[in-house]
Image 1: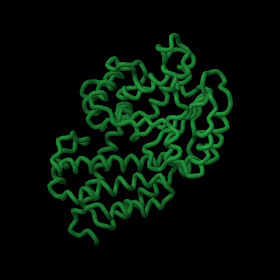
Image 2: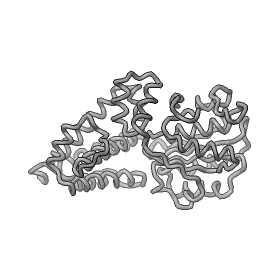
Image 3: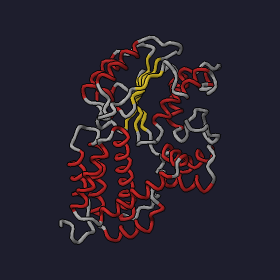
Image 4: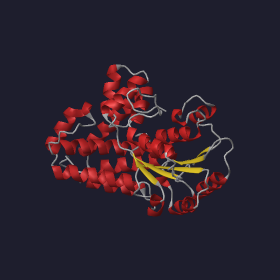
Length: 349
């Protein structure tokens, strides 16, 4: 969890989503707590951090209630260390990345049990967009008749691949990228120097989780640079080179959850680069994410037309949405690359 920020209006251990915290605080104070919340937003934007902050608050033992979460009681400490017996985490299949029906059924069974030591039993389903239809059906049964002591926290990138009946039975909390200054301040709060905080805040695209990861491991910046180099190479490549990369990425995607997450991060980074190009082509004054590539962006913006850029961003965005389904990843990557514009005069050779 992030350090508490003296610039926020609350004391929950989360930065930049004050409206969501305010909404949840009022719901708790006024007795309007829902049994299920659907927290959506881009990767590393703070979904799990908000879910754990809510869980910590609900089971905190501090008095008065307005002091919760205190961060110091036994329940808060166990929540922070992911060791609380009444907070359950759904595990993804290591081979396919899916939330299997057996896992969801087991979570349903466990959530029905009375809490061991807390007020609530809380079940957290991360990346629920990866749940198959039968698994979603299994969760729906619990959502329709939840026990009074149960809170279900469903986390997903979007609601696109989630059954409408599940969405309608949850209180939606859509998280957006947070302002750059909020990211910068949060980084300063955890010990970043001014230069680090400024650079990472600008590159984060409002995703504090990403900035904190890079602060802890600066080799991630090198990986990011290599990924953007690859993007630029693909615009200058021929069809055979693009298909070779599609094959390599498809193999990476099959290497467990870590491989899938790496491919998703790559595609999301490329999508942010397409967005920067689109802003450039339309003369939009909105801040670019990849500001360290301004020279390359200007060069590519001069070479590509607006239609080609639009096609590139749409093809990438659609593939990101489809990867939650059981599809042929290699063919899907090839289809995306076919829709990308090309700067290579020998494109088809």
